[in-house]
Length: 278
Image 1 (cartoon, rainbow, N blue to C red):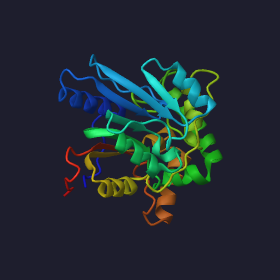
Image 2 (spheres, helix red, strand yellow):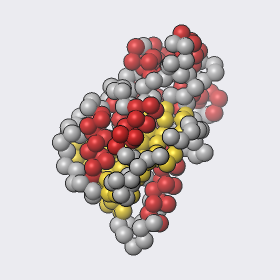
Image 3 (tube, one colour):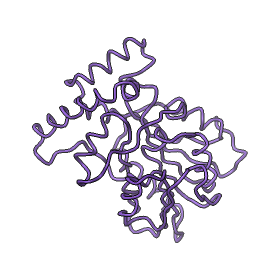
Image 4 (cartoon, one colour):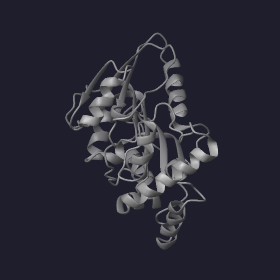
């Protein structure tokens, strides 16, 4: 497996860069992209490359509103992600940001995405790690995180100006969850938008869970990075939420880390299904 590193760029820019690099390998071909989690995303930047973008997400009123407003989608389907139409080997790139941790039956959903991916295609995944102190707090103290996030947002605005926001890179879906992200995203999105879906945090929605999944499915993890975006959104190093994350990590003897809150994977589906991952 790859070493866990800090992303050299924001995750959205990283994903767009990898998507453009993939497109260069396919000259004169239309790139088919599956936006998994289109209800909160803004899509990949493929430049002037010819592409066809299909969006899928769970069916809810708030996700439908945002999906309808997106202009980058050629087609979209909302519903049970275990049954939405996904033709086999139809997509060059599957882009799933802040989705895996918020859907039930996440492993079955991932299986459908992998089956819909062409051999040699890219699976770009960004998720909040279930096995972190932040995710533990998000599951157990969501209302407290709401208040902490509100205070952190005020500090951010005071320190960086009235228009400063917690960075959300292009290509990232809006961070879902029952905790801090609801308040942060309420300030960033237009008036009238409701809170994103709550997170489920199944076992595959973690660094170790995704590593295990890739090994069992014969997928190659090309790059793997960690980030503290959700923790930093709460005022990392100064806010009580950050201190509580460190306390949770200490009490769990490091099992729930406070060093990161999210992980990013660039995964490739082998051209040869009999290829072995070393």
